[in-house]
Each structure stands twice: as structure tokens, then as C-alpha cells.
Length: 124
Image (cartoon, rainbow, N blue to C red; front, side):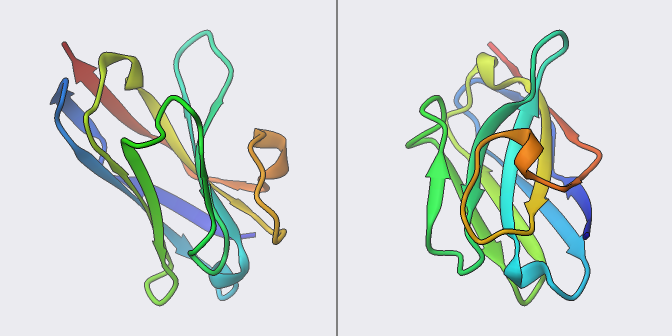
């Protein structure tokens, strides 16, 4: 497993941008599929985006497609989520997750390691 620490959350206005970072510890980061999920109180954790180990293949939830971009820097053991054109409905705790398989996945149970989460609040 890897240990994950998110950063970069905050309070912004609708239309603004934020970039979340997730720093991973462990020698095998470059072999993991990485994902971002989000959760609001009373609701299930929701898939946002995922990226394969090579950093080329990505997948997004329809709700963020065209606005969010996931990327990774394997040399820095870090995955990013660039969020543009933020909307109030993007408000949630955002979690970074790691999956020790080569294929992408969109369900939380498919990911074995999780960060503690970072709050993103978008005001209207």
C-alpha cells in the first residue's frame, strides 16, 4: 500500500479554479492507478477521475468532463486534479486513492489506499 496526503482545497467562488495535489509515499507509486473521488455529507463517495500508471490514459465522470484534468508526475510521486470553472455542486471533500491494478476503475471498493481528504467549497 501507499500513504496518500491531499492538499490544495479551499473556498472559492463559482467560475474559479483550484488544483489539488496528492503526495504518495512508497516505491511503487508509478505502478498504481490513481483516482480522485468526492463526497458530501449523507451521500456516497462519488468517482471524479482516474489515471493509469503511464499517465496517458484517463477517465472522467460526466459531471466534470471538460472542466477537470487529472495528471501525475511519477518522478515526484504526486497526482494532481486541476479543477476549472468550478460550480457550487462541486463542493465536497475530495479524496485521493490508489489502486494496485493496471486497469482503470470507478468504484471506491476497487481502490486500496486512501488519503484523509481535502475540503473544496464553491460559493455561488
